[in-house]
Length: 129
Image 1 (cartoon, rainbow, N blue to C red):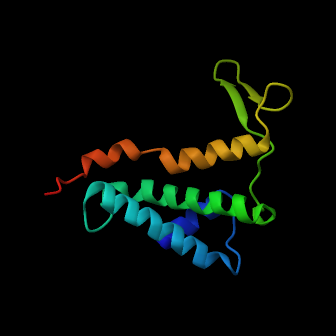
Image 2 (image 1 turned 30 degrees about the vertical axis):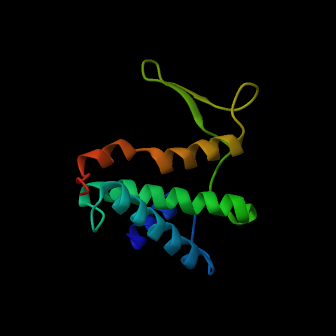
């Protein structure tokens, strides 16, 4: 799962730096333990692996933002698509008044990574006696 999380972070535009491995390993272990405890299983089920990778990436990026925000490089937080219209093709970017700041979008992104798919845990939950 560690390597998948590294690839996921690279997909977001973040390249691991020298001191990042320990923090990322901790995030992966934390997510692994959370899923194992919530589902009462001994290993992360294959069906939850992608959710676990996103959660680990969210844990890592959240810690990076909290403790060393200057190191979050490569992530373009300036523009986000606000509206897409298919007929007659129209794309509007979320900039200017009434739009979220880059930091607010980043916080929402981390929140999404940490929480999306948690409802699927119930499919793999085992009864604890």
